[in-house]
Image 1 (cartoon, rainbow, N blue to C red):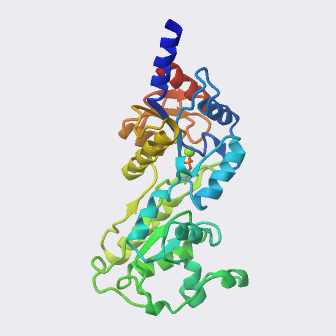
Image 2: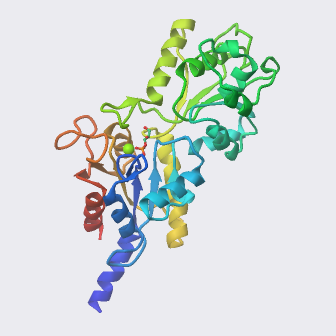
Length: 343
Ligand code: G3P
Ligand code: MG
């Protein structure tokens, strides 16, 4: 019948669309649910007129925890399943680097959590700044090192090992110590502490950052400095000390590599959901930060939806990076409008 024909058409269209959600400022604020986020996900998880699942992935610049516990935490806050197969946080694509480097310095995050993340990514020998402080406390003269921290660290003779790369995974909890150790390594001969490179460029080990956000909204009335600000500080110090620019690689939104990675994740998530390994034609990115979610989505040819529940506080649309699909009061409105357009 005609009704059935319309239904078949709609199902076909639904299978040709997908969503990429930013997390902070769209679905949650920290650990607090944004209620429209729960409803939006219920709709995409099958509570819609067609009764079918509409694929969606999560693309966040968040960091600092292994994927599995973070997804479990999000599932319980959002009251909807969040699988690691549909989840990309800032350092997720950095797991590929474990094939190239054996001994790495991993910087940032609470306690020793980022060591766990890196080990789960397959890095064989993960050093964190505390291991180096435990070996030689004088490296960080203003640092007060607690006994508990010392007990959990893994000191060794760092004059006998080369650190092959520096990976900043998450926000530094101690700029003074982390910047000092990173700078010591960047100025060393091939990552060997206590040496000084003759040539700052050819003997320098590479440095990677998991994301580039300058600011991050918190409970404070004005956003706090994030990894991007830490990186810019390091770059300026490096230039002042050596006279040359610091080459570096940045991951996360809005970097192209992260969107390419998202395509791969979405393609395999499509096959898990619809049994067909095919990238949908109509992808909607829902984000709150024009300078990361929206600019990245626009450049990548996605439909971009800017919501007012997070960083963006402006007028009709963002002036520098306007969302091409529109500005919405919240994620539910964005999802409903996209579904109305496509189906
Ligand atoms: O700025 C770091 C992080 O909190 C941003 O998360 O989900 O908005 O990309 P998200
Ligand atoms: Mg956000």
